Amino acid sequence: FTLDKTGVFTMSRGQGLEGLNLRPGEVVGTSVYDVYRDYPDVSKAMDRALAGEAFSEILELGELVFEVCCAPLLDRAGEQIGVRGVAIDVTEAARQEELIQLRGSDLSRAYIDVLCAVTNDKLQIMSRDELGRALGEPLGEPLVVAHISQLQAVRASLRRHLMAMLVDPVDVDAVVVAAGEAATNGIKHGGGCQIQLYQLGRTTQIEVTDSGSGIDFSDLPRAVLSAGFSTKGSLGVGFSIMLEICDHVFLATDPQGTTVLLEAGDRAQSGSLENVIGRSISV
Image (cartoon, rainbow, N blue to C red; front, top):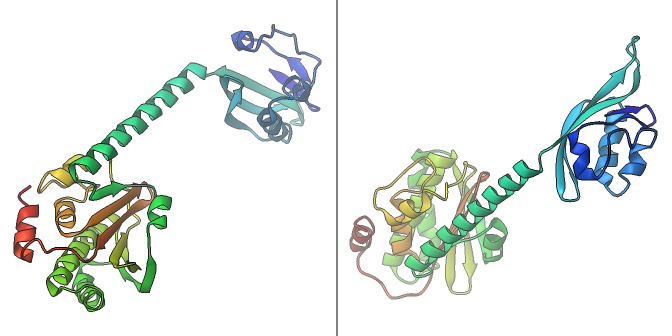
């Protein structure tokens, strides 16, 4: 198709017109803004084209999807006298992509449901917003950890804080180990992490956040259920340790990073720290 500098069609042809119930040349002499008055995205795109911008954009016209490519139409002197463009019907391809995304979403949901079930609801996977709503009151300032060499000092700091929050010293040692596993993975796979303590009633929460590339859902079942499994995107054996020690482990992950929230409170001890870790690595 071509338009003059006011947006009036000067040429319109091609098989794609059939889906729009138009014949070749039918809209010639009519403004593109009148023909597509019910599609504001088309008007915005044509504004850009008439302003001299060359671009490619996906536009939806009802149930149809077009990839529209526009460029200035110039006279021999190089002055813009209108727009030339091609609109390619990509409806079928768009539907297939949407179907693939839906299937991927269904698969992710299945992973989440199964992992929640096999861990007796100890592991809960949620969105960042959902995880944010699960937080209690923050305690102190966050600890920023950039290198593995800082972990010893971080563990010592966590131990001092947790001694005032958890009744049993064995609990304190175990939770420090779990937090250390989460922090280690944040450093290894996220280039560093931030640790923040929260209090929710009688429950202590430790949030560990990194800015890595997130965890691949296809790796998550093995990362949680298989001792020793590890990839760049997984939490490896540390996940088993966290689940063995903590009351709950909340996980939010996406391409912008991963947040692990560990919860511990007043509960019956499940043996010495050595036995707890021993069970977690022999799953």
